Image 1 (tube, rainbow, N blue to C red):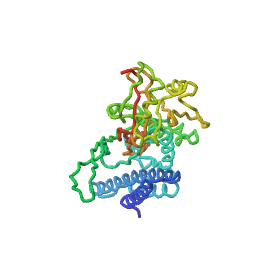
Image 2: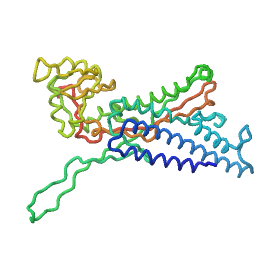
Image 3: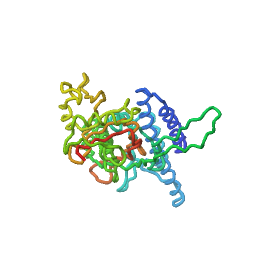
Image 4: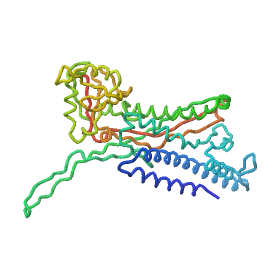
Length: 382
């Protein structure tokens, strides 16, 4: 019979598969889908193992204090019911029985949701920052140092037999990637959940989307106070350029930002801005020719500026004095995001009856990484 240690062993086996997939230099779409599916399954199993471990402790406490094992209405012990329900979930994928939750005012259980892992991954892929930044899957501490070489080490020359002096080490910068809790507490009556086919699955999907979309918005413009510090907020990290015009942009500042970015970052560079800013920029002429537009639209509907794709995000700052409405650079090198805890949902039918309460929680972070890989343009003259 399984116990929580065997479930944890299965988690470790899945984690090994995740590590192998994440280490691939050129992952395929199938690899990425498999990675998210395994990640969702691993977190669901971790939650199940935790409940089984707690149930075993409850059994032991009951035996110590009362001389027998804690039981539920069916006569099974809590641990036996947890194991039975877990086997059923492994075989069928059905939600775990709410009867296994405690019956006090704070009852509830974590819904095993490996199915929605694919949904979360699709939302992330479509997010301009989360979909392009370097992703770190964190465990243990909620803070991770991300060292990168901010200045080259000294390289000297010598003849074949000439003397060689000791050289200095490269300069490292180590920004901190800090993860914060993102939570949502939503509820629906049991009548609605029972009467509308698929309502609970749909509600869970909305909650997963809400959490990831809010984290994505903060990765653009969050202020770093109990939330992700967004790429556009990292004005003290990235190099900045001014448009030269108060409360406006102009066509020449785009050309200047393009050539100010080091060559090694240009191959993967993109422009970031909101739709309102793009609407203004789309009317600009190319600095080198009044008969050519600065921004061009491809057959796929996407815009490019100076040959580099534009990614739109509603959360980017607007054009205004002292604001930074445009960013240009290699997002994967310039920005890092971290997931310390994937989104999970606690289903609680007791606390706010007649409502079923769904409490979702994730722990994510983001910060500037390689400061040289991004340029911010300020719509101001100084």
